[in-house]
Image 1: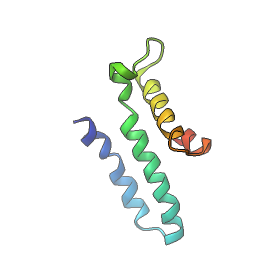
Image 2: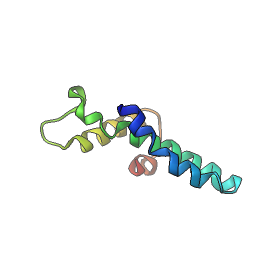
Image 3: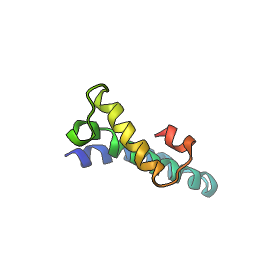
Length: 82
């Protein structure tokens, strides 16, 4: 259920980007990837392995996403977007 709910977040975004020019579409493709990562990690803070005693689950999920993206050499600007 978690995967299917998060994946649905991408449908409207992809529909909007489909009508763009190729240059803009390339830029939006990266945005789509970042949006997908944000959606996938959003609820990860509900998992005990990623949950902290001090932060809300959304913050824990964002922290896990940040760690994942840093491990894949994304820029700080891209990480901040997620």
